[in-house]
Amino acid sequence: MTTLASTPALVDVPPSTSINTILRERVARSGEAVLIERRETPSGPWLPVTARAFEDEVFGLARGLVARGINPGDRVAIMSRTRYEWTLLDFAIWAVGAVPVPVYETSSAEQVQWICSDAGVRLLFAESAQHADVVGRVRHNLPLLEEILVVDDGALTDLRGLGAHLPALAVTERRDAVRRDDVATIIYTSGSTGRPKGAELTHGNFVHLVMNAVIGVPELLRAPGARTLLFLPLAHVFARFVELAVIGSPAAVLAHSPDVKNLVADLGSFRPTFLLAVPRVFEKVYNSAEQKAGSGLKRRVFHWASAVAGRYSRALDADSVSAGLRLQHALADRLVFSALRTAMGGSLQWAVSGGAPLGERLGHFYRGIGITILEGYGLTETTAPTSVNLPGRTIIGTVGPPLFGTAIQIAEDGEILLGGPHIFRGYHNQPELTAEALAGGWFHTGDLGSLDAHGYLRITGRKKEIIVTAGGKNVAPAVLEDRVRAHPLVSQVVVVGDQRPFIGALVTLDAEMLPGWCRTHGLPQLTVAEAREHPAVLEALDRAVNHANEAVSKAESVRKISVLDIDFTEANGYLTPSIKVKRAAVIADFADTIDALYGGPATPTAPTTGSLRAVGR
Image 1 (cartoon, helix red, strand yellow):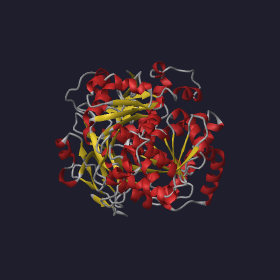
Image 2 (cartoon, one colour; image 1 turned 180 degrees about the vertical axis):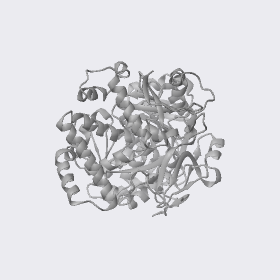
Image 3 (cartoon, one colour; image 1 turned 45 degrees about the vertical axis):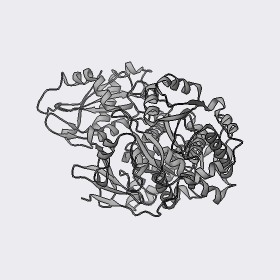
Image 4 (spheres, one colour; image 1 turned 90 degrees about the vertical axis):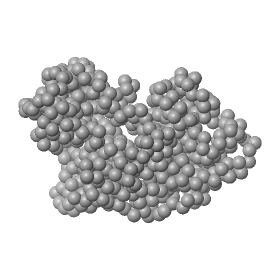
């Protein structure tokens, strides 16, 4: 089995290069061409912003930051949804040599306090008065925080006015002094396993990935008319990388969608050619389409078309698409696929998925309908992508080969180790954790995986999440959880069974999908509390778990589940802002539920067998 894979860089980053170089070169190439399209109201027209006009706005804000007393290296926080002003602030802060610190707009006061205190934030931009109020609750514990500026209250206009008297030279001298190895941002991990850690990412980390991606993935970033709509939080490294990649491209256009409730309408009006998303988005689109098909003939047609999409995609892999399958695919396209593509804007050809496994079923389905999802893998500490499937070099079910200039090694215990110019500098204020994570010249991810003969990476789980049953069987929960979560009724899954006689799972229901599922299955409208005990729902969940069990051995299979009467959300503390379950919190708070699943607390017992049964909490 292959244990090491690497891909050579297509271009190296000179020491004098920074993120500022990316914008400067885009303006030099195509200053009067459109760089960004923005909306002033949620349903208003998309207004073009040229590269030169964007740079002028950046300079106006940067002069204001200089007048405000922000110095090179100072930390400036941004707490906002994904919107045009975030991108403006990012580049203005970089232009004066300062360091933007992103804060999720859903963060609690306690989380804001930790991030701003640990990073030493001097100035904070809050999107709204509500965000400012969250910060205000803990401001007495933030002696370094000098001011909170509210974007919706005209803070950017005021900032421009503050620096209007300064010459452009006040900015250009600072901008040009920023170097490749300077810290560009401190991004705090989402904290699924404890208090967030601040990953220090350099200008070179980002620029290396951007410069290589622009050359190496021309189908997305260099194609005529290339455009993307950014809706994932810009507080997350993945969205931040795409923001920079678009600006670093020859002519691609960027737009922002701050509210996912308007995403479908925004996709329809903006018509992106490529998209960045997480697997949950693709699951929701598929499940919603299935529900809209209703029952009877339309539902049968949808399932037939879905099967055709999967067979067509797999036949493409084998280079053996028969004439009969081509005819079926053409018919399915007219009946089903074209409507799905229209719902995603009509021009979408490519999507990049990360953050969690997508699954082969969805990968083949979307490619079969004409939208190829390029699944990739990366972490905050790797500045987002470290491996990704590429157009023409895709193996569905993997997260692709190492990206240009990066390397992957599989340790003896299966841990994924990563190397390359995209690896972070270290954890802010945590030298011991940094030394542990960067031991031996490799970044130790804590993830488990394998490399196939082609050097493509497969993710199998997290080292810290490995479950050891009472019988000594090691079980990686991710495979089971991802498969069960694909069912339209399911919102979240947490597989349990550490020191238990068999594997079990906690399941939460998707309240948004429940009404449509009930309607298409001839059931009355059920509340979550009613559904979790309804025989038809429990039977459907049993089938979903049995399907998941097909991917693992009998000893690893889920034998029993408990359906909870709540969902895991960011608001109740069980999800991170990047939609990862806080497993430790769930297991601690639902200890009684887990004990009930097994008939009592954990005791050393031999593995048991038995039929699956879904039960209430």
